[in-house]
Image (spheres, rainbow, N blue to C red):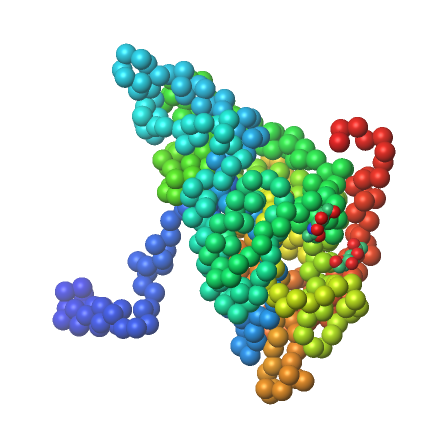
Length: 468
Ligand SMILES: *[C@@H]1O[C@H](CO)[C@@H](O)[C@H](O)[C@H]1NC(C)=O
Ligand SMILES: *[C@@H]1O[C@H](CO)[C@@H](O)[C@H](O)[C@H]1NC(C)=O
Ligand SMILES: *[C@@H]1O[C@H](CO)[C@@H](O)[C@H](O)[C@H]1NC(C)=O
């Protein structure tokens, strides 16, 4: 048996150190965690600053012998101070309680906050002027937009300069995001406002605003029930550090403020450190459930709302380059644009993902979002799709593995979500798990046959609707 003190062991240890300094660093037992650290910001569906998704491990660049020859992206707007609902339901009630503890005598400091909540004695709200700030993008949001714009430029250096116009609806948060984006493009780009009259693009890019039957209600009851369960142990843990009574909505509001405050200030909020890893996972699960029922596989409208953009994009891309695919007369003229950008809201990337069968899971439906426990194995993880500036893109790949003759070119489609390729279930035989173009085109045509009756399911033609 080798003793630790033997010269042999010392030499062995020395060799290990020498080895670890070489280019290929082997994994030693001590480094198995690879510095793993839980990051709450990666588990906040819908309200975290942008981050690239890891995806399935496929190369983010074009596969070997392929080039991206066209791309179309739908991008969620950049960070806003807060969404009205989130603020009114969860954050504002807590902020009111917080400020009820201000003591004038101690120079505006708050009293009674202790332990992990002690920082609230001096903490300042990142939303000092809610009347003017809610729903508006933040200065950090403008910076982040430019960064994502630059990222797309570096990803598509030949395509981005062909962009002539980008689209956004009338909301200032999408307009402002678009403006920041196009500032970093080298050419002059026109920002076009999508209106209801521009039916095809409006339906494609903000379908939920064109659909009378769509509401944000689905999932509210389930989320409430989940919140009332998972926050109880958290309240039990934190109550003794708080001078005010904590309720489930306060815990939810605090967890939300971790995301919003971090996105507003561009650095991790102190609030993020209040909760344990498991408490964040409960928060994340609740919102994944809500989004699934509202804009995902759990809402029968989702497919209908996701297909118009897929239809427009596949028709558009069918027209470019030889060989031609499908009926190319539907898209009037080709002005050479090969990179398409539209700015939209958090609901839309999930509709598209649902229509494509992404983030779906093999669970039986009643096992997908149980209310008495977390479904850890779910693939519906919206933190990876809809952070601020979250996006879904369709790339057209032109590949030629056999010659330099364009006659031998083959075309494929790849779906990108927050930089990472997401292989399509049922269509991934191409390079880098891409989908042969004709097969994709057919898939979308079939989808349109099944889910093309947008106005019908949305009950858009019923005259007796009064709330419009
Ligand atoms: C949108 O509709 C308006 C009004 O009908 C029209 O003036 C405008 O050119 C349309 N824009 C696009 C991009 O089609
Ligand atoms: C599909 O997209 C094309 C091109 O934009 C459009 O002409 C067509 O009407 C769309 N189909 C449906 C059913 O909306
Ligand atoms: C999602 O998964 C369920 C369960 O496996 C399946 O029945 C359904 O067809 C899938 N949806 C899509 C769009 O692939």
